[in-house]
Image (cartoon, rainbow, N blue to C red; front, side, top):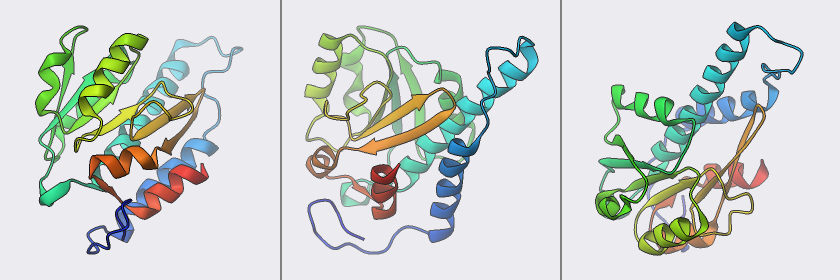
Length: 193
């Protein structure tokens, strides 16, 4: 495995776990549109939305699990900022055996983000986004943004959430500056999608 800076590192990732993440991402592309306009029944639409939220949560969890922080530290604090419809699905990860706990931060309370090793960024206005990214650029913070279609704003990972399709891009420059190592296959998968 390689760090984006080019330094060789030890093999710390399991292939079987990566295959599961890959299968979920591929299935997200093959999932039929569950919320078609002609389907007016509330049950299937709600079920489709819940499945989509679960897929987003699973992909985020997979990306985190295939990321390594400097000096072997493990993340303990994951933060959600901005408006997002995935809050419940991300907070539900607190019931699993993760080393990190998700917390939601209300608007204008971003000064409390200092101890966050993971930040999931929902909708923020431009000045809030700039302020947040200035605080974390160059620090070992895994930032996952759901509103940066070109992935050029400074976040490490940028989700593309279009209808029932879920994909992501990786900002290699931001990853290199952060010091976080992301599994090369995740980097490749992010570029190929």
